[in-house]
Image 1 (tube, rainbow, N blue to C red):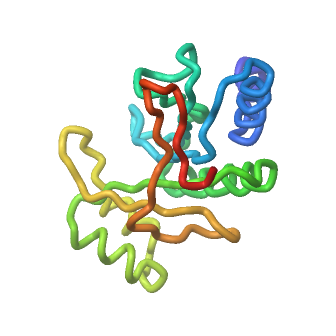
Image 2: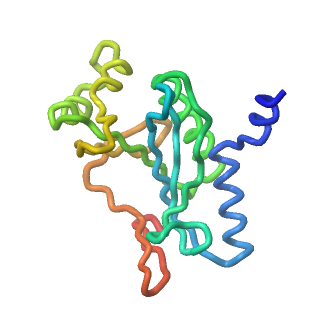
Image 3: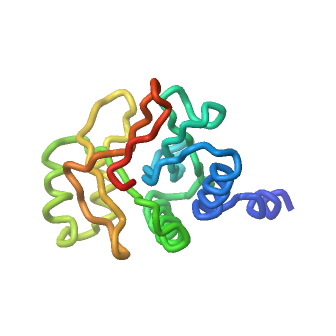
Length: 177
């Protein structure tokens, strides 16, 4: 019974973003157009997805204006989390066409990042290779690769400019606005 109630209140990324944008219009604050998504390792070898967006509403965002929109339920494996992230983003991108969705991976070595960017579609056991190539140690710095969701798939982007909150003017600068 508890699981049923938990699932009933676990809203999707699409629902949370629609709620946020509606609240922003009603309360007259701004949100960026870019949604930054990640897959994270959680305790007990579980995985989760999360999304964040820039806002100038101090009661929502952190000191840098980052509001964590959508922490997910825990998934049993990396592959499921990866597929759920894509499904959530695909659904949200249809409902919110002005949204620009990114996902970020941090690789353990520069070689893994380059291989991912150049050869991912030709790698056998891609998801297993990806899982093994990512940097899961939060204490170590890895090589970040950013992808943008466009036309139904993820495309690698190297020089993307991201939304920024300028604290002095309380405005959000976006390359997509």
